[in-house]
Length: 111
Image (cartoon, rainbow, N blue to C red):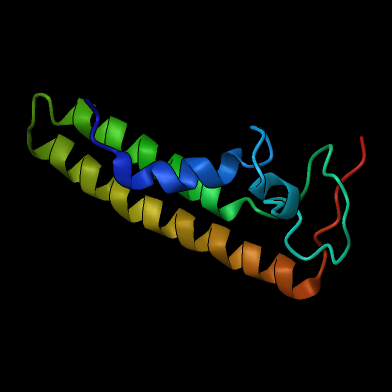
C-alpha cells in the first residue's frame, strides 16, 4: 500500500478528458484561456504546471526512499538537495505557467 490517497484528486483532474465523464465535456486541462469550445487533439503549452509538480514530487519520494534504505550522511545531504532543487523547479514551472496565461499565448501547437 503506497498511501497516496491525498493525490487522487490530481489524478482524477488529469483523467477528465481521457476517461468518459460529464466533467470532461466542460473542463479542458490544456485549454486554460481558449475562450471558445474546441477539442484539444494535440500538444499545448498550458496546463503543464500541475503534472510537472506531480512528477517532481514522485521522483523526489522514490529517490529519497531508495537513498534512505541504507542511510548515511552523504545520502541524507543528497535527499535534502533533491528537495531544495525540486522546490526551485516547481517555482520555475509555476512562474512559466503564469506568464503563459498572462500573455494569453495558450495556443495549441501544430505538428
